[in-house]
Length: 305
Image 1 (tube, one colour):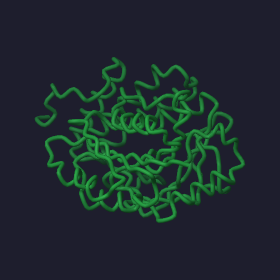
Image 2: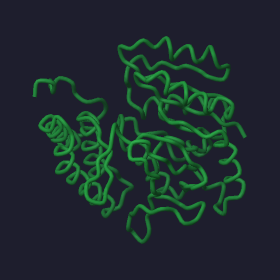
Image 3: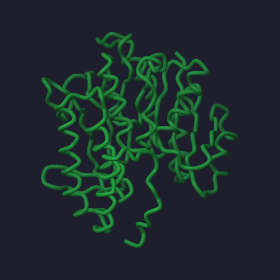
Image 4: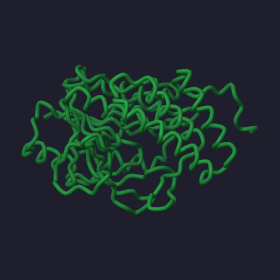
């Protein structure tokens, strides 16, 4: 089984990136570092491809978004006949037995191996100091729950630590590059399910991960705090997918619209600067409706708001 890893970088903390690479370099056949950095000294990132024989550096010459950067890595993996690809954030840290555990779980799975498009971990969020929950869909209802079984079929998951079945990409497709960032992983999971394939969550697979830049508890929910630009992408992509995604049900689209509204009402109150966050999110709504996708339009000087 030939296993690759794709790490997407953007002006990374070099020590965190080094920890990520070191945690995987002896476990996988190749690591592809796809760099989205802008106006940044990339020499320390490039050096990893010198220090580690199985690390390949690929520059996107600017920030093209996490979706397009991931696709670049996936195409390379396809061309080199990889069987599975792990997608990773630049600050994720993997346990020593991560790939071995994946192989064991795949070998003993009760699911149809030919239908498994992705296998994902449960993650420990370093900000909230909590273990995450898996996201399920049952009888049209979408909910988060601590897993009872070791393996379960999921509705969606985050990208970091996800094992992607390379041979199924031709049937499912690559990441939706128009989304740029945020909801890219979720949309791909929804597409997987819509085509009759599976995302399998394994609670024996565990990684350390940071959700957002920090977190705050609002009622019973622990919310990851993101900067105003990230809030723009969340709001825009929720609206865009709720209006134009042709494989989602009416109920799923309604849920996305409700989430967009909740974000607009809640996050400007807990994200500083508050007015700037609100302005970004309103722009996100407008751009989602008008299909203004890709990278945010920088013609509007938000810094002066």
